[in-house]
Image (cartoon, rainbow, N blue to C red; front, side):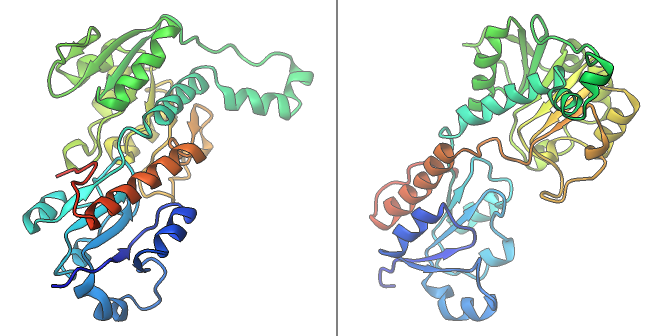
Length: 315
């Protein structure tokens, strides 16, 4: 097979990066096609690389229609929307965009933590509605200082969250597959035990089948009525119906959520709850970080077509 520079775009990178790529590569816009079957009939055999995003992923049926596919380069750190075992079995390499988003995602976790405990959204509405002038000060909130913060998944992002939480004078603990010898935070090999210990539970583990509904009603009950949960991981990690019921019934004190089931069609029950701070899966949503993520997608693509090692391979 002759060398080609044909790329199937299932979901694009940033617009300015796509414009630049279009100057040197044949970009076949699957994402914009009105007749995807016709497009694949024309170009499927040429495609050696697919560009996508973590939110869209790679449909398994599409994987089977690209006989010469070698690489999937994905915009995002998560890859639960890509069938990695199927790709590995096919010899298809997958890349993602780790590290460059750690800071913004960790900052968002702290933002959600503070906003939830201090009821920022309620306070904003209290002032805007005129309640402050009519009825005086809003009800008291709770401090982050001296709280016990439990992190579910102490990977790169989890560690970045912990380093930002430390200056608030919190006590840190974590749950993961194994103890990390270079970490001084308290380790819990049981998630229920971590939730029972913690005042705030921060979910920072990968998504996918291995962690689906990891945060269930038992974990929420262990966290308790004065406990708070923050999720910047994946919506699938939390049993969402159980969380909604727990928030409605006071089983937990509140939640700061960046991710949800069935995004972007969030369960409307969340919007009716005053003890929830909602962010629309936008933890990495700064110009600077999204540009850096897009550039890493481009750099992986460039490395592949130049015959060089991929920069951030997953498998």
